Image (cartoon, rainbow, N blue to C red; front, side, top):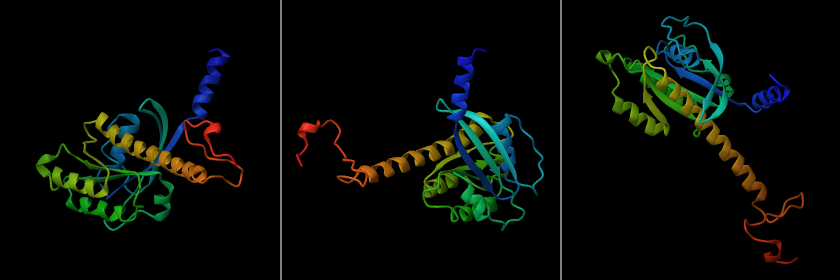
Amino acid sequence: MNSNAIRGIRRKKSSLCEVKIAVLGAAAVGKSALSVRFITRRYIGEYDHQTENRYKHEAMVDGEPVLFEILDMCSKNEDDLPSSESLQWADGYLLVYSITDRHSFNFVRKVRQQLPGDAPMALVGNKADMVHLRQVSTDEGEILAKDFECWFGEVTAAEQVTQVADAFHEVCREVLGLRRRSKQSLLDRVLGGKSTGLGLRAYSRGKSDSALPKD
């Protein structure tokens, strides 16, 4: 590999966008299975539900490389809500419930109340292959997602790869969209006045200096 190619890789790495996602939900809904399926494309059915895990994974989202850092939250009991430290760490959230567990569906409602109003998120109903044990309908999931104003999908970590990845990608898109809006809002505030403390003047696009009022 020549020196130009090496420099190109280094530039790509240095400009890699980083997105931190917390996977939230009640115990045994499949948070670890979803996370590992996204990262490795493999399915593992048994996990230690007493430990919190963090993963890093590079993936392409809409043609751009993204470094995902994923926090697989551990819920030790049905009333164990995420800590404020974990919620503040994350850029976005994947809220997971099991379609076979009504309690887990109610649990994500409680989790949502802890998040900021504009928090980037997606709602996932896992174990969609176990329809014979379904306790939460697809319509209920869609209604809750509308209430949360977020993307929704039913998936099965045991059988699906693309659909699981789509959920993480949607959270990533929401995070990046919020960042763009925040940058634009900051730019608008900086350029919104006639002038700034730096002596800058905000010009309207398309107007020449000669068309502006003279001092």
